[in-house]
Each structure stands twice: as structure tokens, then as C-alpha cells.
Length: 336
Image (cartoon, rainbow, N blue to C red):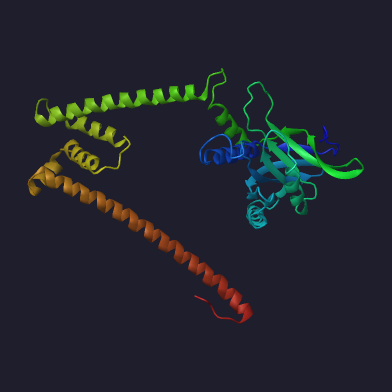
């Protein structure tokens, strides 16, 4: 393997490619059975995929990547899967082309050249992006290496070998925001991610504990008001009702029953008193509130169906208009 490339190409690598490769490797490693850090032969698991982007003159910019299916026994790729993925990406990103492939490992291996040659019918000079998943705290540079292939004469025999190429990191606004978010997940003061996660969960626990204590105060106050220990104040009950509506509700029949009964009690004005007299007791009032709640949901569903029917009607009208124009030119009748 030569030390550096002599092609003169300039490579620009986007962070999305590094994130995709790292995510691919993490998923494969976590799905191994048993979930150990090594595979059956004692080596780190390897993942494979294609890198796509744009080449403008002597500048190669790698924007994205996608996974590939690789058969380690035959050292071959699933070409049908590759062509299907290439076709799908071409529809979304018509300017992107397959620039090469990626894998994981500490260094390029001899078997990697088989994959490299297999992709030469798509790109005559593919690039090879290698990510080293091993953690080295002393390393300051990114554990990513880009290789090119060059034809060298070794012992009188021309052979393709991998040569290292330099690259720069290129980002767009969306990637900078994402990378900044990921960077803040782990503290830069030397602490571990688990330490920051523990501090974050402790803060959430304290907030939930404080919220629970405040809700208990309101609950005891409403119970005392219901028992007649303290005078009933409708204005304060309305404030409590407004506050409770802002709380995140849980999906539970008991919670719904208690919540609806609390709504009835908090809106204990003359209108609900008259309704209570007509019904006869407090329990049917909750049933009435359930009916109102279900009626509201039903109206919302009917409005959604009406909107969908109106949109479909407009689509049919536009289709008929376009088809009538085409049929007048071709002498055919309308389809709908």
C-alpha cells in the first residue's frame, strides 16, 4: 500500500456519511448473538455500504451513503439490491452518483480489493472510505481514512493497490446543527456520557417530584372543599381547572373518570347545578360529560372525512378536466 495518492483529487467529506457508517456499525454490533464486541472468528464485525455524492472536475464531494448486502463467504455484493437502492436514490437525488463504498476496520484488507473491483463497472475509479470503530482517546483526528486505487508495478506485475488520500470536512447548515447537538450530548470536560445522563435524569426526577407535590396540594384542597371543610370559591376552582388542563394526560380509564368528575366539580356553577337537579345525582353528570367528549371526537372525525371527500372531489374534477383536453386531441372519451 502506497503512502499517499498522486491523483491530485480533492475530497470533501460530509458528517452525515460518518454518522451513517457509525450508526450502521452500532446496529450490527448490538444485534449480534451473543451481543459481544467480536464476531465468531474473534474480529470486529464489519459493515459495508456505498457512498454517493458529486464530482466537479478534480473535486469529489461525498454527501451521503447507504448500506449494502455483502456475502463474506464469496466476497461478493448483492447486485440486485445495489441497483435497486441506486435507482431509489436517483429519484430523490438526481445529481448524486455512486462514488465508491465504505467499510469498517483498522486497515484495508486484501479481500477489500474484490469489492473495490466489483464496483468499477459503476465507477471506474471508486473511492474507499474506511472507519475505524476502535476507541483511541489519545487520537485527535477523525478515525476515517479515504483510499483510492492506483495501478502499480510490483515484481514486474501490474497490480491495483490502495493509496491514502487527504480530505476535508464539509458541512451545510443542517449538518452543523446536528453535529452541534451530538457534541453537546457528551461533556467536553472529561466526564463520561453516563455522568451527564445521570445528571439529566436527576433533574427530570426532581421536576416530576416537585410537580407531584404541587398536584397533591391541589388534590387535598379540592377534597377539603368537597367535604365542606373550607368554603367553595368558583373563581379559584376555574383557575384550578385551567391549570389541570395543561397537565399531560395519561391513557387510563380511572384517570379519565377522575378527571371528568373533577371537571364537573370545578365547574360547579348554576348551569351544572340545574343539570345535576335534572339528572338526579353526580354520577350521571360524569356520563353526560363522557357523551359530550365522545360527541366532540365524532364531530372532529366527521370534519376530517368531509375535508378528505372535498379534496378527493377536487382531484377528480381536475383529472376529468385534464383527461377531456387530452381526449379532444386524441378522439377518446373521458375515463371518469
